[in-house]
Image (cartoon, rainbow, N blue to C red; front, side):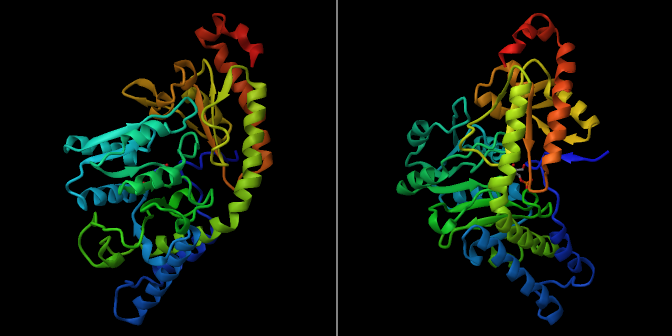
Length: 394
Ligand code: PLP
């Protein structure tokens, strides 16, 4: 059975071109880029090229690129550095819908005695800008707001938020893990101080990330040891992955146009057809300010995990907005923050496409999913108790 992969916000297929550029650096060109000999030096030159490729994708200069092990490390390093560089300020502003890489760290910071404000979102997942403005104080060391949400694809007005922070002398970090490679980003035109990137979200390898650090921003390294990355991130460089990420960034720049036209059209066809064919379904999140590849749809009165299991039998890969933790299905913190009704949140599915998806795959899902939902609903006591009568309302 063919795999129909529509879970690209979880991870992406490493592009063939990326694998090709990486391969020589495992077995043949394994030198340490910091070595004095030319065998290592040739790897160092390739790393410089990769740094330039990454910088080009986000309109940064190569010295502003720090290679890390993942998006999570970049997020942690950015926020920790901002706090360490301003010991007198012990307040962090973030949002209620951040990825656990930021949310989990903020919970830890509270245990350490920091104050954290989580700004709320409305029912469409849009940031409450009034609350955001009010939350910025003279005590605030750093703001960390995601560029685009991994579950709904909703894009925050991060530039506007960054300008507000800058005007109050507050450092600004954005977790741009889901945005980089999907929508244009130009740090030259931005006032943000720090930005996180993850390789495996843009057809690069897993286990490689980037922290963009604006020139002149005070930085306290998270990992201390060797002098790699100009002393900003110790540890021998993951050379094959860095080189692969460079190539992935080059490809992402080339594919950006297709991502925002063809992929968006495929996403819209999938979304609109499912909404039309499946009664009691709706899209979660702002449909305008949204990543071109993401659609989070709720199908009322069905369990998301049930849908995933049945789609899996047809080779379709997606994600649900609920997680089975400690035996109870808990809707995601993102959908709860948006106030998505319980019966809707439980039946939410995230489809996230990539340039590798085809129209045939969209047609396949459109064909297979409605009968799956009908079957699941026929087993739901809520649906059969009368809600099914609402089916024609759409
Ligand atoms: N931030 C966001 C918005 C993400 O979606 C993810 C991964 O799902 C991360 C951070 C973490 O990235 P990584 O898996 O590279 O640690």
